Image 1: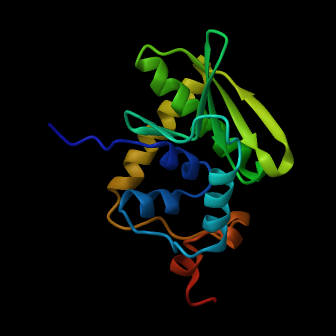
Image 2: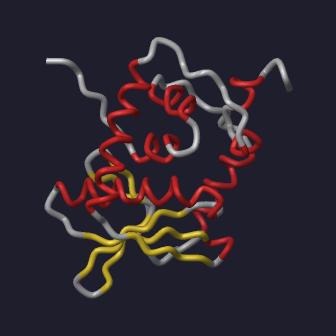
Length: 170
């Protein structure tokens, strides 16, 4: 039997932004850990929503926040900004789908503390179909012998891999 790669929320997040970054992460090529944007993200994660439980590992997913609202489990994903809300949406939907497969019904919240914005996310059949296609494509990308060519996009300015992709241009 062939090995089937475990897809994580991080893979899903980057899939909707940059396919090259998906390959880099799948091949365990580390981003610049001193990058200011990574530092800011860690700071926001550590200092916001203090009363809610922090990162929790459930199977192969790591949720940022988890709480109960009456009988409902609410999973929260904290992001620096809503610029890449679509990626954050599918990452959180992936978490909800994974929990659903475990028999756990939950709702989600995208949390953007700097913007004081909260976006509700609920599992849907349509979303599940998009996720299934994304997971299959992530696995395809990970099997490529070399990463996809870099494409200059808006995200590149704040990407911790920018030196890796565009070292000659820097």
